Length: 239
Image (cartoon, rainbow, N blue to C red; front, side, top):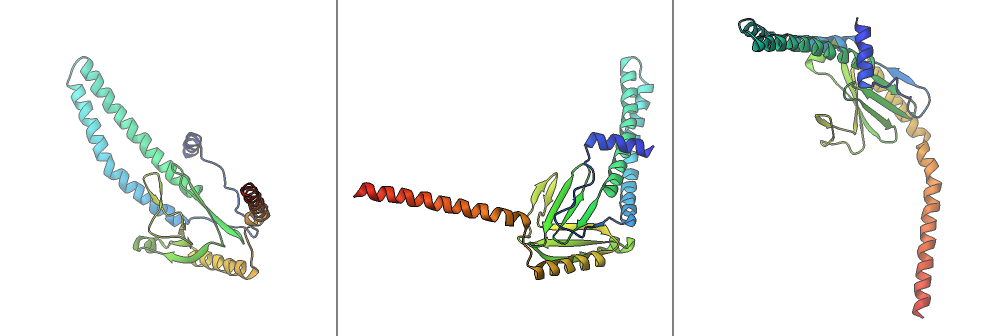
């Protein structure tokens, strides 16, 4: 049943397939831990149990009033009460499906030159960082994460601060990448650090920058030559 509903949600939200690996070789792919998904399911269940009495109370009241009325008002009230129950059931199933999809379609990719993180289903976010810009790698673990045995790895780049870019309903710091809910945080941190050190020792540059460099130089020379021609023309007219 879930697989069928999952297919509907994937088509409805146009969820893209697995992301392309970032620039570089020695690809390593990490995933969020199952215990992190268990924690989020508990949060979903608590939210559902809190919302259920409100929906059932409202729909039950409408149906009760409808059964004690006559004519068109009775039919309208009863129908609206039933539709409210159906909406609650569909919303609950949709929230669970997107929760599970967010876990299944969450990607953490690391190569010897960069890393790429994709998360979210309703609001999809994908971030790619090159090792040339990485400044800090740290691990975070709150009390609830400690209870479930999961941690977050934070990779911060140059320019990170308290500001952020607005996405959806909040601000997202585009200078910080999160490996959320992993149970091998130390291994991920050590891998990124080792590849970052190897990257710096090798003196590697960005392939795109290397390709764009000569073109930018030629363009600058052309601008300089044009300006010299204009200056010469102005000088000759002044004689």
